[in-house]
Length: 353
Image (cartoon, rainbow, N blue to C red; front, top):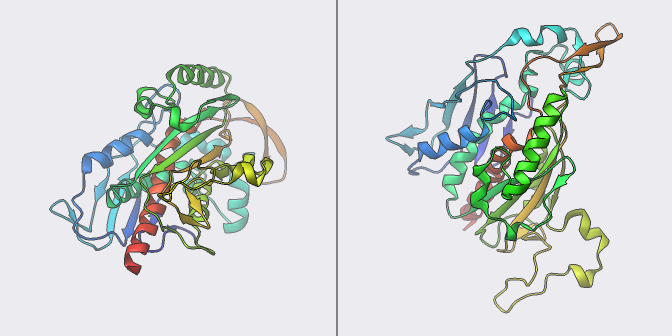
């Protein structure tokens, strides 16, 4: 299986399955001498872990990280950082019913057709549990680029959407509610909606907005390695992501150039920021902001038609512990992947200099 690595200079290779002994990863290219804040890494893992509220999967995992290499006396050594995250609360029997069936909108069918076999317990490598390793690496990447601030939050759940710009939001509210929405009134509405969807045995999607601030000018390359292109790749590599747009996004296609152009101030900043902080694939020093769309979770705790290996269509009800809406737990994953991209481009730029 190819495609288990991400990044050029600051890179991450992940391994492990949802119901295996452990997940893990190897981070390469991390500079030496960085005093790591292990508590900050723990906080990021707590934000992503299952079982943290009534609106997420009730799988109970502490997601404690065990570092194996690349760190000495609390500092990075410049050598590969190896780590594992033990799986401690697998319930593989919940998936015995799907051993010989393919769930709709899952990777089951294509996975088996491509490789000839699959780990059906929780989806194996296709499980969103793989993203735990990304959050570890992202937490370290954030410490490499400590001056750059990355903030993500839930901006919509189903048809319930924030109607304010991120500049109007109080980011301190994000971690004060289980939905991770900065508008507390809207957060409660979203939470109640997710609970109702869960009662129905159904699922719902949503959108996460991410804002990257204090970005230096000059990160990114003008042709294939555009900064926004790499951010798009990073976000689209996350499970359940169906869409990515930055800056004005699709709304920009409805505008005239005279409306869309970001006019300059005398210091090089711009009066507006419809470019989303990136022009010609290169950061311009303004805030980078983008939106990531997540589909509803495919596993429903209600009956639906599934395909068997014999080619029959049967009616089967999903079992196990699943998120009725992934977006609250995906917030730290979006931040982590953004941090990996920004750290990679930051180190690439500094290497040139």
